[in-house]
Image (cartoon, rainbow, N blue to C red; front, side, top):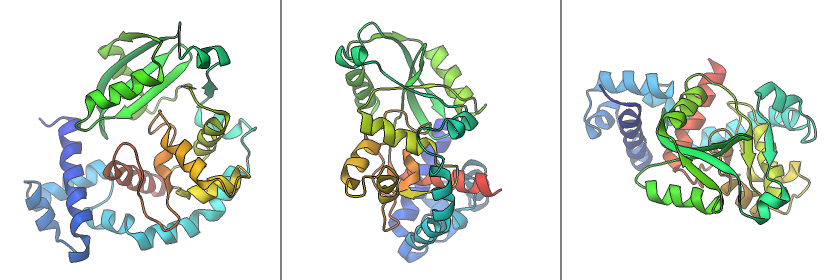
Length: 275
């Protein structure tokens, strides 16, 4: 029986093929053949996994669709972000509370902070998760770079007391991705980074924003590069939804855990929200 991770890898391979050949309008048969599946099995697996058919997915990730979607979501985005960073109403609705490290924890790089961590499976591939008694402090997706992802995590919390517990990690991942349980998030970042991450938490499912949108909201319209950098430094993937931010052109580039994964997350959430 295929695991979540092997199924994800097959879907990812299909999306790479669609991305590389979309100008030729590949048929479903061609894509299925490329990943070693029959046409009908591929359609069934793809729809069960992503929530749309391969053809619907191709439409969801085209540049024109993204541009239209940005316009359509503008009023929803504005009303959502108008709630304000100081308000807890949206965060309360999401059952997510974002807690920043103390100045002492920042200066000492996590000294005396105990972090339990481990690797496990999610519907979007293998992931590394770390958590403390204050909340989740790391969630990174893995492809063929397990050591690199662990090193990023270790560097972020280099003086913390790390406790490896695969069972607890898998329980957390199942609660997040399968049972939709919400956890507090324990983050380490500058004031600007934390404000950007709070803004991302206010983005509803199925909504995409541009880097300029987030910059405008924070009253820093000329700081798009700094905003993009803060988004890129998000160390809690999926839960702080940096995948919902795309370029002004509609291009879905710049995701530290893989562009294919970003496209899957956006398509999955768009369909889920509209179903």
